[in-house]
Amino acid sequence: MIDDLAALRTMYAGPTPRAINKQLDRLDPHCARFIALSPFVVVASGDDRSLDASPRGGDPGFVKVLNERTLLIPDAPGNNRLDTFTNILASGRVGLLFLIPGVDETLRVNGAARLSDSDALIQCFANEKRVPKLVVEVTVAEVYLHCAKALMRSKLWHPDHRVERSVLPTAGQMISEQTGIVVPLETQEQMAARYAKDL
Image 1 (cartoon, rainbow, N blue to C red):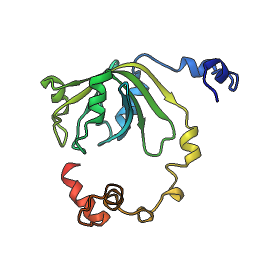
Image 2: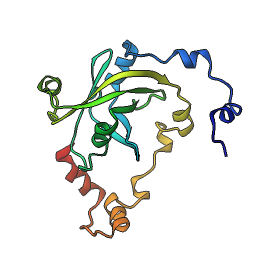
Image 3: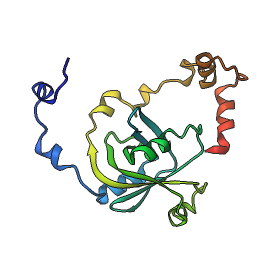
Image 4: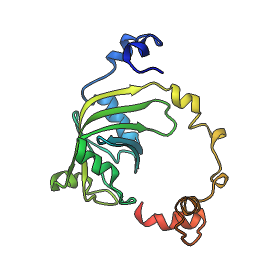
């Protein structure tokens, strides 16, 4: 059992100067361009009892770079558990992981977060398909490009490694079995059609 930092560090070499120095405290043009091309971000948050990682998606650039220190993430219809929002209220912090399809590097951003219903911030999304009710305003503290090894190992974007959706039951079937709450069966296509109005 490894239960202290000194023991952990004996097992691994120290990080290289490049790995340390690539961490920035603001969004430079490369980071801003990465976010502008990204249609997907994982938002990590937590309180003193639990942790959560939640996917968010939209058209590339759906997360707005307001300036080199500020990101804006619009809300979107979901399951209404509000786990991420509840965690932000509790801790005021998030970690973000941006992905671009076909690109093996990812972009990590950590910072302070707050929920805003400011008209000025909401208007940043006035030209989008849906104007958000709330915006998560992230003040950037740490940002860096993460190396490509994890996505290269997983072959995430390689077409030969795509999994046919039919290898799993539909989400509705799985949740019905997990919860005992039976809902009318629907195909994957019917589910996609039902979701379409909230995309």
